[in-house]
Amino acid sequence: MSAVSLLINHKNCMGCHACEVACKQEHGLGVGPQLVRVMEKAPKFIPIYCHQCGNAPCQKACPVDAIVTNEMGIVLVIREKCIGCRVCVEACPFDAMQFDESVALAMMCDVCIHRLAVGKQTACMGVCPTQCISITGSKKSIASVFERAASSVVA
Image (cartoon, rainbow, N blue to C red; front, side, top):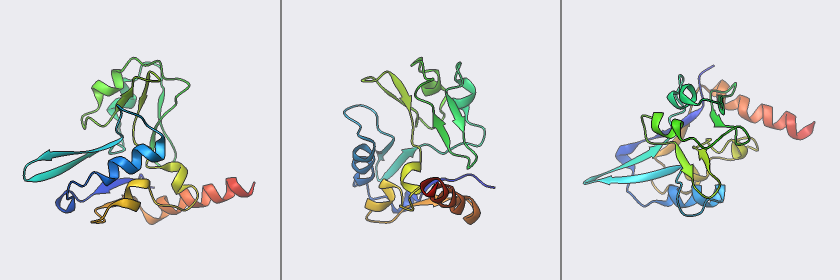
């Protein structure tokens, strides 16, 4: 089963930053961490986000195993285990791992797993005016997110 992750068509990004705002609102983030952000490299805009690596360097670097990959290939930070050492932040080759100073925890895009679980799209997908953000993975992988969520809601 292939991993579920975001796919952003960089060519269509117009640099509006709506994805940044939607993500911050969805996750209740204050000043500081940005789980998705758009960098301007004139004349292009480059979205920076977690690529949900199959062999995640952040996960390998974590000294307390606070970063896991679930059965759908989504890389997640276990907040209760994170000691705030920031080793994972340094290990991320995409500069996507963030550190929230206010709670002293590492964080990253979780592909809005809580939204996918109830059949919604990610917060950033829902606001992108150019629709350059999508979810990748096999249909079977994406469907499994919804099936597992439905069974946990019913149970």
